[in-house]
Length: 322
Length: 254
Image (tube, rainbow over all chains, first blue to last red; front, side, top):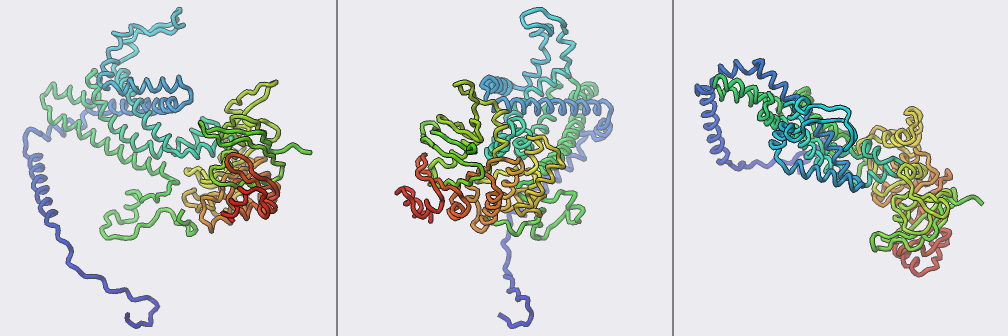
């Protein structure tokens, strides 16, 4: 201890030691660098990649039309999946045995068969049902539609992807609902709230925290699964690319065009998911980390030195160890 | 003689083969504060939950303010109430839980405002005024916009009390309201309950706070093994328990 008159205590001497060496990091770094260099070299020199063709077709009209069709299919199929999933989850958790077994049967069937088979099935639905008519069951009919005019390739793709998705989404929603503490329902009941209101106002908003991440996953997965619709002659992004390379045989450049578009949309969706999770995480005990934008505004996007994390929520001094 | 607020006659409750309540007879008068003590597993919380039909009773009669809980009587036949009717009954009965059960996705103020707006359909402005006043009453005027996770246990429980009071109930049930709290936070919650009792609220309090029961309670009930062992004026029961079982329980907790 040194005698000082200052009120600040003298900070004891910091330990100076030789840090542990990590030769493995140098070796693995070198290997990765060489591989990366080979890849870059190949990207620039392989004539089969044909970047000229890539550039020509990347924002070509047919490709962009296919991209829009892919996005439409993703949005509509996911919308059917989410709404259907919530309904199926509520049915499965219902006290009504008819509803819960009907939901169980639906999930069993749609998870039990490949989505590609379901797509082809809907595409060929005419072979099963000739016409659809409105009328009294087993009685007279009033209006009749031809199934082929109703179920276009777009509708077949939506039905195939959406109904299949509903089965998966229902399990995600059900897990979310079950994750909410029973006490929340009891407290709501004690306040005189009824089942549907409890579900809508109390349980589902809390279940969202559990539901959102896998739903983001499902959406990204759906974006890519829509490419299966190309097999039922629906022109989405992959089919648009296929149509072009079937004519000009530039298969690889066009597959890269298609892949780059998928990656771009997937990246955008991931960002959207991040902010959605933050929104539904409000009120949870974990302090939210700053968003990349907030970090950028604070001017420390690349922080290498350690600093104590600043909690987003001011801590209450009264909060004990509860 | 006014009608009792709560009237239990021969109430039995089974969980599967477990006989939890073995014939409870109790009456709570309007404005009375009844404290229920007893070892864990004695059925005191279960009895409390039966009063607002969170648990169904298996036999006997249980009435709140002259109406059967969860059933309607037509002639000599009992009819189960529909969900909407049960919900309507529960609006009149406030309940405070051991683990608070606040809505974590809503601020303190929104927690208090939720039921009057959603259940009673009252106007937001009127409810906001009442909710603000209630939170002030329990000493939380500076915590209204805080989420439950930002509040201490004691603060959360006081929000829960305000939330129940916002429905303007005629009966309040407390299920071990201080058992999940750090000892230093218990006082504020008990103060809020004390004030409520002084304002004339009818209260049934399941508790381990013997001091509170002695000071605030009008009646003390000692339960064990699913029956009421002893009931009476808190000071008498605590000073001179008549039953051996009561005496041995009190010797452990006092």
